[in-house]
Image (cartoon, rainbow, N blue to C red; front, side, top):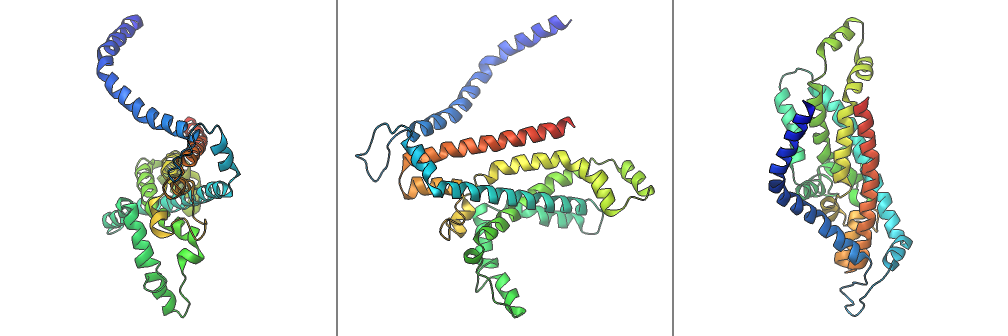
Length: 296
C-alpha cells in the first residue's frame, strides 16, 4: 500500500514539476544574482570617484574594512540596538498581551490603539518622534519638562542611541503584542481556573502557567523581529543620520555611507558580505533556539 502511495506522489510531482519550475528559477535568480554581484564587486577596485582605479583587488577591500574602527563600531551599535529593542518588545509585548487578555470595558478599542503603531511607516514614525515628541523646543516631552521646572533634553544629541531604540521599539511592541495576544487565546482556561482554586495568583500564575505557554511564540517574535531590526535604516536616516559622529551608525547605515556618500562600491560590497555573514550567524542561533523550544 505504501509503495502505491509513493508512486502516486511521484506521478503528482512529475505533473506539477514543470508548473513550479518557472517560479523556482525566478526565486533562485532573484536571490543568487544580487548575491553573486555583491561577492564580485567586493573583490574589485570600484570607486565611482576614481574611475581609473579598476581591476581585481583581492582581499584588500576586506583587509581595509576589517582594520576600520568604523566597521566594529557599526557592528557594536547594531547589536546594542537590536538586543535592546528585542528586550523591550518582548517585555512590554508580554505585559500588554496579559493585560488585554482580561475582560474590561473598551478592550477592543484599546487593542486597536496599541496595535496601530505597527502600521505606521518607519519614515513617518521617525518624523513624529523627531518633530512632535522629542524636539528640544517645540516637542511634547520638552513641554512636560518645562511644566515641572526642568531643562528639556535634546534627545538626539545627548542620548542618540536611546532615542533611536525608543522609536524602533515603539514600532515593534505592537507586533509582539499581537502575536502574544493571539497565543494567549489558546491558553487552557481550565488549567488557569484550577491554579486559582489552588491559591495561585499574580506573579505565581504568570511564572508557572502563562510564561511557559508563551515561550514558543516569544521565540518566533524574536526571530522575526531580529531579521528586520538588523536592517533598520529609515529611522536612522530621518533622525540622526548616523550621528552624532558615529554614535548611531549601524552596519546597514555604514554600508550606505560607503556606497552612496563615499562612492566606494567595492568597500560597500565587502561590508554587505560581512552583514550577510553576521545575519546568518544570528539566524542560525535563533533557529536553534526556536527549534529547541518547539521540541520542548
